[in-house]
Image (cartoon, rainbow, N blue to C red):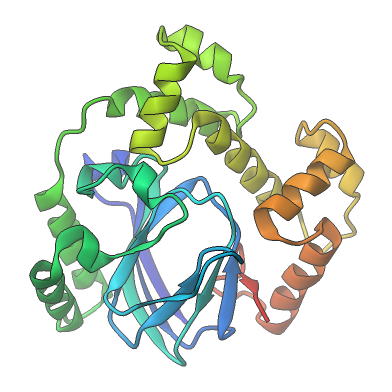
Length: 279
């Protein structure tokens, strides 16, 4: 698969980790994406893809693309034989200046791009992207669209600052300490987070710690899960195992087996750092 990405210019870089272009045959027809402490926007340029946002909901089809705020559960993506899209990897608080609704309404409920920006605007954007001469020009067009839609969002500074502290500490900071440092009550902070991120600061910290823990593991080597749990600050290995199942639906041992399958079958693949084969 071809993957091109770059960081946007200010002020978008304060909201976005990167803009990306993705094209090619997916490594698997279905991929499982564990929760991340970030959000995602996809502008789809090929056949529709499908998302199942948890085992208790129906699979939904997305033709024009979608927006996903910070998730609390693993999502299963089903791809066509060939996929082509441009998108945005947002910071946790990043999507809200571009949304017509509170982020809380989107928690674990991916919405179509049409629901966010309207059918005519999305159709025009997709047409312009599809006819652009190359990936870099496509990313420039997407960046221009985001700059045009950027709006002021009350309370975003507080959420941005506290979320950045959560990220810098890999989720290890006490939420009470954040409240003291910013001079707000825990209720006020939680309400702001729900509105602008979609989850509470405590939930974001859990996701941040879990993601940081997984990304630090070398799955090519033997893994001592007790050491991993202790090093990440979990109460004990049982607590860590509970978090693992809550976030991925898998035990740590099973997760390692599936991750190693991906690394074995598609070494060096663009997507090998986070998604898992779902079949």
